[in-house]
Image (tube, rainbow, N blue to C red):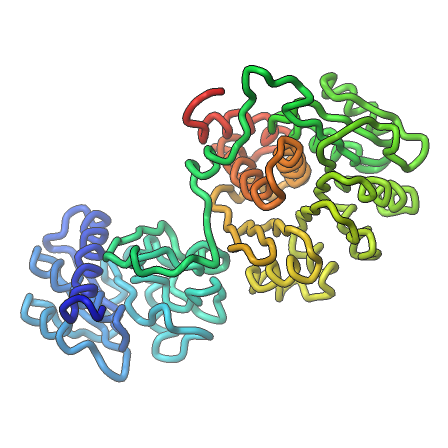
Length: 466
């Protein structure tokens, strides 16, 4: 801002905002546009965007809510034929531009902002939010009260964390980034989201000299007499995720199911809760459907006594929550809890975790000394002193039993192929979410469908074959 003439960045922002609004309207001339204008700069962005739409023939009215209004922006709007209107105009708008509060706001919206947000949500017009929907904490995604539910959010200069993490992401709609020239001046991020190209760069590929051992051997200690299917799904996710070999170790009931579903897997029937004689592996998946009895605890201790990376999920997390001493090991650990499991690990409240996912995933990584993949409506990956990675793929249809077991298998396969816990978790979540979208295609899915779609997800992000 110090290097440019005053108002330059706002004019760039308004131009991008107006272009998105025009595309959404389709035909600008004669359409009714209402601006919700607060005291801050995003109110100015809305006013200047309204000016541009008014000059193209739109009826534009501004509802001013703040103690002050951006004077130059309001003057430009009035000179272009716009007007100041009362809040009754919201109901008849074809398009509503939310410029109430910006990225500096935190906490619940106060009146009249809260009421205007609710009226906008109830109106028939599409809502375009400026930078972040009003009511969303831009730095965390928290929503403390009323919040605007946008169809599109036009964010300026850089993506805001609150647009990527629920509950903020859930009300942001489609996010459009307007480049206003900030790139060279931005600090390193503390939150990142992998793209398909990033995942493509990170994914291991077999070479001409590869064999099943060089491609990664994953051990899976999962399933019990009650949840036999968890073992089947975890092994399936691992095989579909690219492991050269999967060694399954478990009790008879799940072992029989794994043999029946996956003849490719090498199955070891355990008479004793020890993996000492299972064979060499490069990583382990521990916990899905395992049970939480003494036998399961001893098996978990045996797996965690190894010197290879271990992914812990489901019942394995319950065992660790009861005995944190299991985590005292030199080799890396990746845990994949949902909010309830993380609540038990941290002795915290599940609702608090859901409301502040970033805070709690960072706390867990630091306190437990592990990499954490927190599952849920927004999947986030944390490792101490690294940016939190937010996963942008997925679908609500993935909220189905067994899909987490598939994720464990996919991420475990990437661990066995040599990725770090941080990268295996991030890439595994991306591929799993994309596989869920492909498998669902707008309809319900079963966990086995997700496993079957993993190769298609890998093909979708891989720019060139091995």
